[in-house]
Length: 144
Image (cartoon, rainbow, N blue to C red; front, side, top):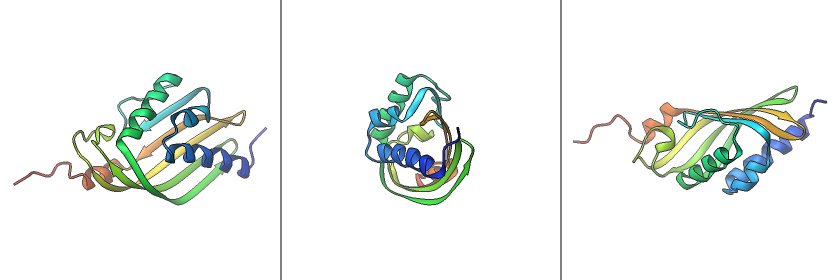
């Protein structure tokens, strides 16, 4: 049976709250067993292993300090949603984004694609605006 918008919003917003408070166990608990997880451009790739997902979030929370998120839009379908937002905060050692050793304040667009099953997130795919991140961290700039 398809979830209604209120149920989808509750699942996504709870998941995002866990992320905002660096609650690794909360994030993992919001995912269905065998959930597909993938953050582009992370070198981790697609995983369905809960321990790998747990390790990914633990590492990510060490490197990212969010100061806020500006919602742009959320689109709904039958047991899926697409969420677009702008993330604001600080990246410490940008290795997650292929920018090792780079740190700084950034604002970048995030696009999440969620699929749901049994009141849990069955698939979370996240696309980050890597070009914006790299530009703000000075990747490709030469020092004089």
